[in-house]
Amino acid sequence: MYSITKAFLNLGISNSPLIRQSDTLLPAVITKWSAISREKHGLKKIRVYDNYWVPKKRKLTDDKLTKENKDFLQEVISEKFLKPGESPLKEQINNDRASWTPESRRCGVIARKIGIYPMWTKSGRKLTTTLLQIVDNHVIRYNPPEVFSQSKYYKRKTNNSKAYGSLVVGAESADPQLFTAIYNGLFTEAGCLPKKKLTRFRITPDAKIEPGTPLFVSHFRVGDYINVLGTTKYYGFQGVVKRYGFKGGPATHGCTKSHRRPGCIGGGRKRGVWKGKKMPGLMGGRRRLMVGLKIWRINTKYNVLYVHGPAVPGVNKNYVTIYDSYAYKKRHIKENPPPFPTFYPEDVDEPLLEDIYDKDLHDFSEPSIKIQEEETKKS
Image (cartoon, rainbow, N blue to C red; front, side, top):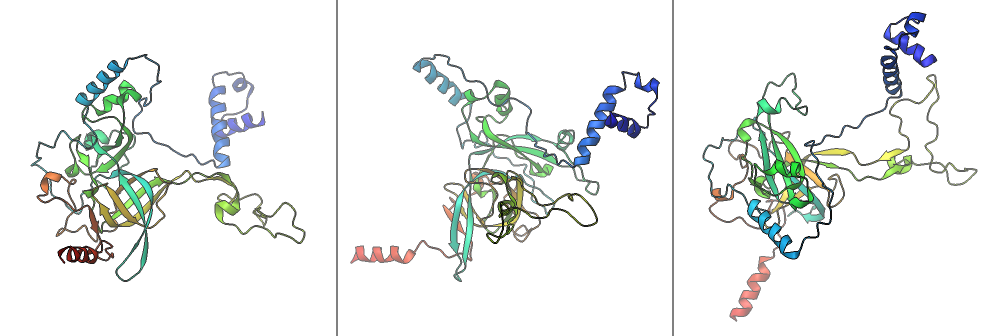
């Protein structure tokens, strides 16, 4: 009763008998009271955004189909949708592409973290790199600025008057029978198989790409700096020793059941626990961004990026989002612009090498051994 009375006072309403008899104000009062109580505890809400509010998975049932019917369904799927890696634009050459400018913002790609690999420079310095494999990326949809500005995900900065559009990219094709018809309808414009993962990138209008265009690892170059966004490993509820690296209490000399406890959490003139105090709680499972990671090596055969550092967020086989780091523009200059809006295989006359190294890395291909083998064969 005291809490409801306090809510009346916060609303600026007197606690008179006439007001107490009114039933119309009670729901508003209770709502205001609950909002005040939540804000008082300082609960931090974690906002999770979804790409599209459509059902993704459908409930599988035993349709009792024969083998001939299943083979017929696979033929229909192969005729209707594109195979992984194909594009409906491979016969079409886009001649109205815009040129790259320092203000341009390209789209990114979706990759999987597949492990950590050591490398060495020519001076003998050891590097630890993270392998990120770009798996079956296709452009699904392009939303121009006038459409993207109406979305709830659009955030316009007050000091930035540029108009940005969005490009939806999907990764890893899957069987259309595993998804609902509404979710499969998102890919009719691109003509590709339904994707397991969708991500939206904010781009400038000059960097638009037609739906159905595949994205390869050659979208980036050796020496470029990129940002990697991923979800950290989830550990569940952990104590302060594991969560924050606290030293803990003494092991002996009278210490009882306080070996891994945080110790004093308050005191002084201000009573209570301050906000932000490091205490036990849920550890991991948060989205983290690594800024300015250098690309040391690119494998075009398996679409693998060798990215600097072992601290890419997430465990192996987790999805990560990769896009250009515009805070590091050492390679993004007018004399040597990146592939814009993306890499097109028909623009290259000669086939690309399978492995492309940075000039400072040591090459372990050992051509001297091959020369010795050829000399032995001649002799």
